[in-house]
Length: 367
Ligand code: F6P
Image (cartoon, rainbow, N blue to C red; front, side, top):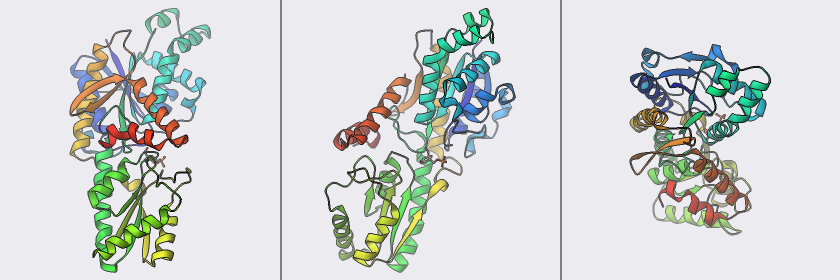
């Protein structure tokens, strides 16, 4: 019998609950056992009190809930070998032989590390007398399946990560609201949006709200005097009759020397050089809260169901997988491909190879 553990990890995202619900329901439908692991990797490290066998009704009402009902954490202990070893012991003690991790790139990297270290965890646990010889023979490998739950839309193995659509909807509503007050006062607004090192939320919201200027980490303003070029662009649209200026800044935005571009700095430029009456709005966690929109409920559900199917199809040679949706088709690719992508992108930005960074991002940005 397959015994599937499921946890959510890292920043919560709208639609994670839909995925958890689908995994539990599909697992039961396919005659597997399913275990809810509470509070992310913290729960896996804590053990039996946080690893609870799920019944069908335990996930009733999950579909429409925001956040993650089984809790999440940014677990520091899991970053260390010893922490992962505790997790491995609890996985074996609970009889779990496949694990679904719903989270962002950090959480999925942690999952892949656990999988690659698995034989040495089993060896160490046997040597320390924490598991029996027969356990060691039963648990020779651990199947891991990742589902990308993150508002950031920062992974390449899927067109859109679970939560990104709801966050974008919330950002657009907030900017629309700002537009009306900006219009009344002829004001400029500088709005910071989330996304960590990814500019998708900023770029997509700028397109959807008709913003005047946007800053994203992957494509910093080039050249020395970008501030002047920004001012000219804003002045031109005012000359063309616009009463407001809307500037969107991704929280990870930087200039071409990798110095952060902060909303307060943009405000200072607009106030001092253009004498625009300017206000700053940092949208913050409101972007991540609240109930998921239909897209996140939908992709959360179909990806959760597919995670169970992928586990049932897998054999000992199957690598860790990541479930995604590419061009409207559900996919299961090696988890490694997502992790290598994240590392490559970080390297290109660090080395200031922005053309390469944009090329790497382009499947997500749909350039
Ligand atoms: O990864 C999701 C995210 O919301 C990022 O956009 C943001 O940088 C970060 O998490 C905020 O994390 P926390 O909730 O721990 O402050």
